[in-house]
Length: 102
Image 1 (tube, helix red, strand yellow):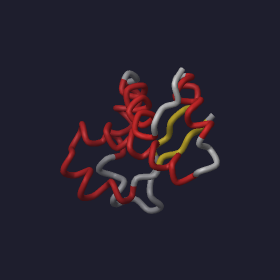
Image 2: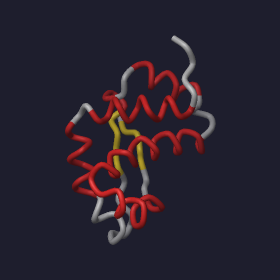
Image 3: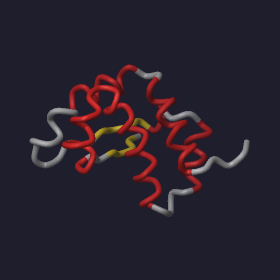
Image 4: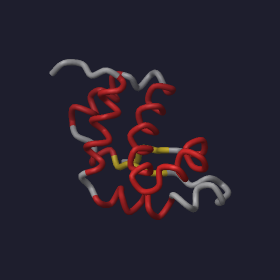
C-alpha cells in the first residue's frame, strides 16, 4: 500500500465512516446541540470501525496531534456538512471536537 497524503487519509476516513449509519445518526443528534451545550459535546469514533489502511496512516502520524485532529475533524465535518452545510460552517465547525474511543 502506498502512503496516503493527509487529505487522502481524511477522504478515506470520511468514506469509511459514511458507510456506517450510526455516524450519520450521531451527527444528526449533535449538530444543533454542539453550539449551545457546555461543556462542548464530542463526536466519537470507535477505533474498531476504522478500516486497517486508515488506522495504519493514523498510527504513522500519531505523534503529530495537530495532523490527527485535522484528519478527524475534516472527515467528521463532511458528515455534518451533508446535514446542514451552512449551519455547520457558521456555528459548529469552530467548536467541533472528535475523539477516538476503544
